[in-house]
Amino acid sequence: ALPQELEDAGGWPHRDTAMRFGDYAEIVGSALGDRVACWSTINEPWCSAMLGYGSGVHAPGRTEPLAAVEAAHHLLLGHGVAIDALRATVTTPEPELGLTLNPYPVVAVGDREEDHDAARRVDGIANRIWYDPVLRGRYPDDVVDDWASLTDMSHVRDGDLRQIARPIDALGLNYYRRHHVRHSPGASAGPSTWPGSPDVEEIDPSGPSTDLGWAIEPDGLVEVLVDVAREYDAPALYVHENGAAFDDAVGADGTVDDGRRVDFLAAHVDAAAAAIAKGVDLRGYFAWSLLDNFEWAEGYLQRFGIVHVDYDTQVRTPKRSALWYRDLIEGLRR
Image (cartoon, rainbow, N blue to C red; front, top):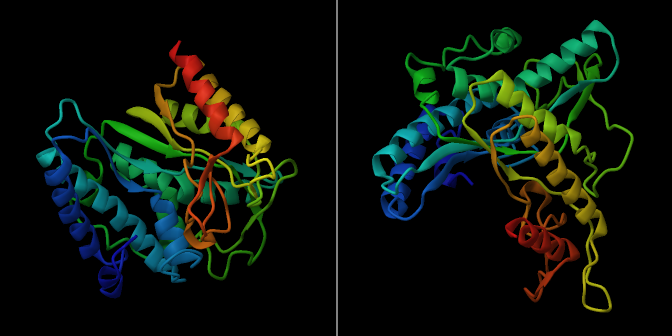
């Protein structure tokens, strides 16, 4: 979370926030850099920029398209500044420095030219404006054109993209689902996660979904991993988050039988293995999350954990998914 003092001073749309993040990275790197080897600077910048400053779904709840675009750039700049700070302070042998993105494969609903253009626009904001600056040192030309009604990109200063593209050792990817979109006049004209694209409508696909309403699409994880490996000169990849929210409860026998989560995790672990079989340099997979916890704007209403938490008593109960995951790991060790 961004300290309130920095949000009051302008938040991520304000350039100085990126510099303060670099200061923070230097402090943390100096304190822990002799013991911690694996570092991720920013987690899910799309959420912070587009949900925090575009649609207002998450904190700080602002609905300003230009602010969302500026926040995206300054989050990336903060990452680049932090990489330099960590390179200077982390002393463990062969440290891994990177960041964590949350990409979404994008599916056009319908075969009209404008539907495919809607998918291109969403892919640009959800995926390419993060990959391209970090791994190629530039913003996609088509997204810059889409944003022409909002900004001339003057907030991007000389040297910023070189800073953002500092070499990284690893890239974390958080995968949950795809975006299914089509063109629909005025559908995203109000507060939106897609600044500069007022005619994008998101569609919920048919098929199974989590209790949060997110489609369960394990094949999308294969797409995410294969696409970044093939399209970019990507470093080692990690799935830093993958999981599902279900309305779990402790049964009369004291157990939590979350069979749907077991099925979800098993399908996505299989997808990770399929990506490796296609040549992806995937080094690790992490289930989200260990504990039921506070989930952004959803608060305590959505349970992602493989361990149930009674929020009144703080009693922890491993769910069936935790036992399954334990056995999976033990089997891989043999």
